[in-house]
Image (tube, rainbow, N blue to C red; front, side, top):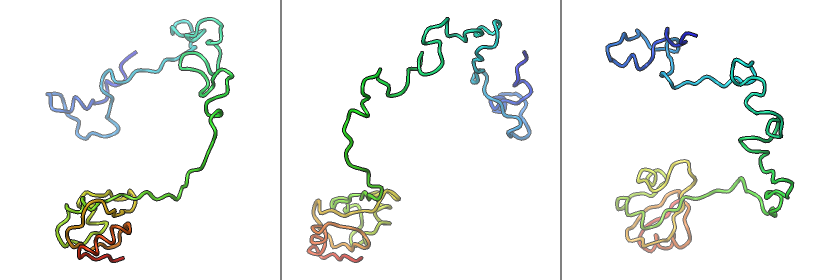
Length: 173
């Protein structure tokens, strides 16, 4: 049987090692690298194939039958008739699909922002303190608010609000 990729140009031939380059690389002249593609194992296709008759499963026995046995394991979560783990353990609670997870920002992290700068979601994203699209930011009172900052449109704890206002800052919603 002839090699099926002889008429097609391989990408490795088009890299400048002296071989002829195609005018334009497209889907019509691409081919896999030599040795990277292996033909599938065709089972039950006659004695000449090497995997005919019993298809490599030997004679009789439970592992020769169809269904969940043999190499590769049995039925998932089947424990031989014993009560499966997923049914033995008690079920409790539920998953709230409306849960919002805040991205926590501490006062110590705000030192990365310039003095007097507004603290908004955009400035926190630019400073690398939060990630965009991962939930709203929330300012917590961890550390000291040493400089007067202006916070606009960010959730915060009551202690954080108190520290900002006592340090000469402002909170706007």
